[in-house]
Image 1: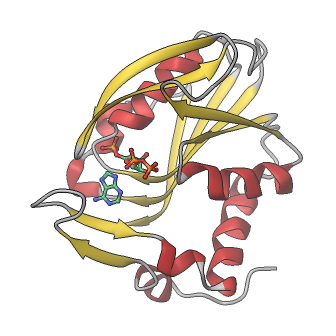
Image 2 (image 1 turned 45 degrees about the vertical axis):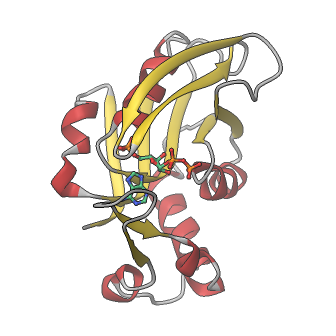
Length: 180
Ligand SMILES: O=P(O)(O)OC[C@H]1O[C@H](OP(=O)(O)OP(=O)(O)O)[C@H](O)[C@@H]1O
Ligand SMILES: Nc1ncnc2[nH]cnc12
């Protein structure tokens, strides 16, 4: 079971780095949380408790920070793990999507054989900012015709309205552990 970590304690386990990677950005650094065993375990346990009974068969982790808890969660859920990677990193045939994020733009890819039709999929990333990255990922996995899609984040930067960009609906369930 999770040790008792309060929301305030969790929130203060992240570090703000001013003007990274660009001037004007307040970067939420999760490394200060991940290096603490009790916080790392709390993050995995909280997400596991939320998703354990939903029949999730694949967890999709978004490169690179989405791989950390995404993989731990897939293990706990008994699900497979799928990598959504930045362009040029996946070796076999891929589907691709370009997108804008809070401090730039990029292209992501997923292997064409990563998910089967009708699977229940949990997309995981560390942080939801403008929603550009997550929206591109959700678009990318639509081609697999999943039965149901969940999206989870450790942190949501609510003032950037990423949830609006994703468009919560009956088909899509969005959740973040912490909101700033
Ligand atoms: O909601 P958005 O505005 O799209 O921003 C969120 C994305 O930005 C960060 O990733 P980044 O591209 O910096 O990659 P990294 O995880 O490899 O550091 C973060 O991990 C999310 O993936
Ligand atoms: N402010 C921010 N902190 C950390 N990761 C981010 N990804 C996009 N915006 C971010």
